[in-house]
Image (cartoon, rainbow, N blue to C red; front, top):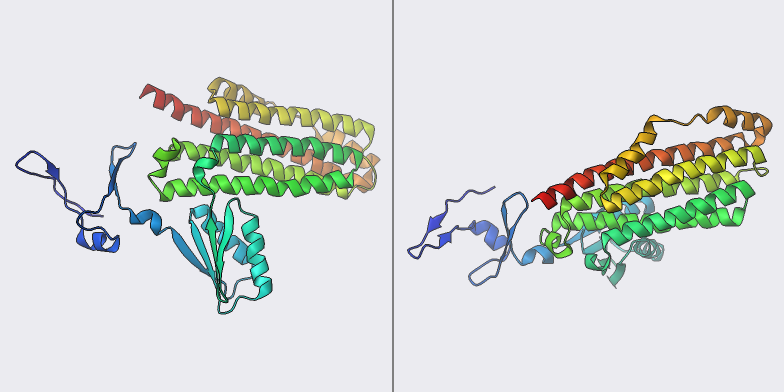
Length: 333
């Protein structure tokens, strides 16, 4: 933190000096063009050209398992680094395959170069090419389709369809990580906020909604894994009850997403009113478990997941309320 007094020239121009050590570190000298960016809070940011050029990091492989390396690369991807260097004394072929697989699981991540001791990853996806509202709609579309197929796979004990839904969960994860990365970029690159036309606060609402949808998709995959454990299709009476519960829970999510997209506090409150009317399900679940004890665990998992995604729908409705307040305050301003 530096403090400077504003000075005035004879011609009335206001001047503020900048710290010499900071200027030297950032390559700022006479003739350097810097950017002054006003912030919503009223502050003024001084941004040198070198800020974006320094957006790179290095990860060392020594002592890391493949899972730990995956977490490390994803963490730096989310943080918004453009270039991630993975370094080791000598990177073995199987380690290169691991790094390549991690890169392929992340939107826009490519291998830019390789040596015997270094693999350089670069994110070629421009945040402007992936509007966050369209990404959220895509995540919801995949999740909605996953649940339709998950229910069909569970009730029909369709193993092929169940496996397909489980695989699609990875598509949702990739898009959710993309949204998280975009938010990380906005925090690191303050000019980007103006370029994408969305504030960091607004983007935080999008990331929060994406996290909730990711959990909804995870439960669809969980139901499919439960479907694979069934020894026989669920009884018709249970199937009918489950479909009714699914219709209610998925309607909550659909309405919550619509409230979020439209920044509609009235619709969001209407969704949240359902939170005060919990549905009594366990008596008929227990009856089904007594009728098909070999399927008891899978039946309970399916019902529990449907109850949980309903809660995630309520969370999205609350996010919609928060986002609507931000939107209304912007319009008032």
